[in-house]
Amino acid sequence: MSLDLLSAIFGLIFTLMVFSYLLGDNPLFRVAVYIFVGVSSGYAATVVWHYVLVPKLFEPLRDPNQLVILVIPLILCFSLLAKLTPRISWIGNFAMAVLVGVGAAAAIGGAVLGTLIPQVQAAIDAFDFRAAPSASDAFFGLLSGIVMLMGTVFTLGYFHFSAERAADGKIRRNRVFELIASIGRIFIAITFGVLFAGVYMSALTAMIERLGFVINFFRQFIGI
Image 1 (cartoon, rainbow, N blue to C red):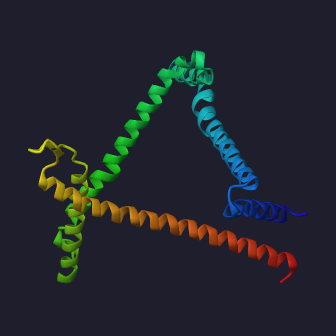
Image 2: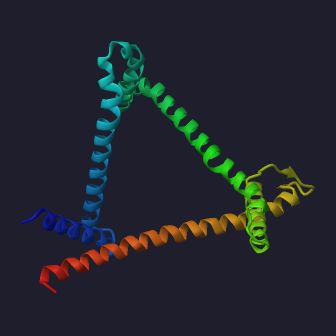
Image 3: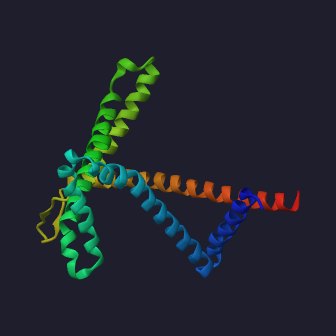
């Protein structure tokens, strides 16, 4: 039996096991999920070991000049193993704090540099008529820039949560901000709708591919 045929058989079996969820939660689907999670975790651990820990931590330890620099990451790395035991889990708190702090800084930096600043630049560039080859292109560019600017402003206004106590004792936002938030809610709903449509289309494409795989496997198996 060739390796390609064996891979196709296992692919067919796991595909049918996942599709069995259409009949409800069952042991076959759970086994497929457990295997997927286990294989994914093993693959991730292998990648981390061969491409992160060994080349960036253990191999440089052979150099005496880098030993002093790398001994701190090495200690933090092993201190995380203390999280496996509740009694001494506090030992790994500092390493966890470093991980969370660096991760938060990277996320904030990525959001500012990769999202907010390009969004502002795109809104500004939309009003640059010098790049438009014709008047109609300039008009549609202006219209697109207005919609983009309105979407950005109104969406940010939705997250403005300052409020004051009204005469009846209830806490309400300013009417202007309430109107802006209402329009921003529409832009957010449209965005979520587009994202859901994209996720749905991706899932539908994957399902069609798997169904095509099953059909082609049986056609080749019976010689059609």
